[in-house]
Length: 440
Image (cartoon, rainbow, N blue to C red):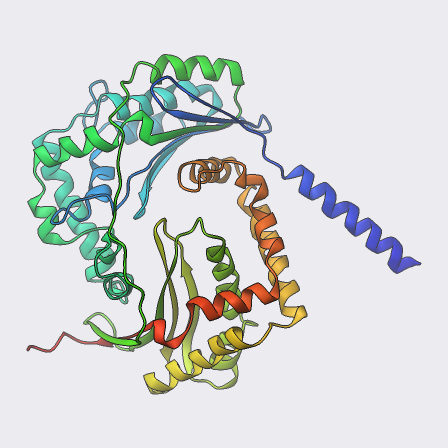
């Protein structure tokens, strides 16, 4: 009887948690096409103002790689009404913090202020959209800033080139073949005319979503948004047409070199579907099953038991058009790279050919439930999720309903998706070695 009562109580508690975590929001469009999402949470006197633009590293022409990231930096230079170099000073002097980041698919800007500075955040983001100062001084300054970032984070960082090597070897035509940060020669080649054209094309209200989340009054916030963002002109419709990749049908081997490392690495890489596809969710579960935590299959086998790997992992890298999937290892005790590949493929093969255990399946479900709750635990996280779900997934309601997708994934489906995408003949073996590339 005690167990039964405990079970009922636990069920009621989980039901309450699920209800308590539901995110309420209001969304609508301005006449200029800007989509607006508002989330009211008056539990703390803070507010997040964010704008996500549907433009990322893949949105560029050949010879102009890295434009989205470069442009992200450039739009902190200043505006018609914000003096050059004063952006961060204005934010910090008013008790706020801000940042931005760029992926291959989108660019995201946000400010977090005490709620009495909501109007300031809205004004600053409307200034960024309507009145950016784009001149040669800013271009020259940010070219050097981005090039230094590239040197620090990629060129001179141990294993910093692994992700670019992954893209280069999984894609032949699609812009995902090139690194999001771009190439030095392309950064040097960027002209003022290029930058102005990029701004005119992509930084328009009908290519963006504005999210305001936190301690707000919905109706007052709507009025401020209309005042600041309503007058911004609508841009031209953006047409995207990227090359379609031919399937990988024969296993390839690629070798890359990194002078910043002493221990090599190796991996199995696969091209996978875009993140809106259901199969992409299943692949996320498979990577968690294989390598999330010390009790995961790869870690327990190759690190704990067999002492073959210093580090091992499986990662699903979701992107809009195609995803990337990597199973990698760093050897321990001079373990041969070929041995690591064989051991990793053995574990992947088990997922392709056998149902994972009911116990492991329940552990997976618990982890994804926990991740879902945590993702909605802060106003800043909620703002980012709302923007992403609307702009990239086309469904704002995923902020409350995405967990249902994971709950509906079965053990049989995990096996089926692994067999569909993670076969040896669809993979690229990447050997990432210390030293300089040998001269031809």
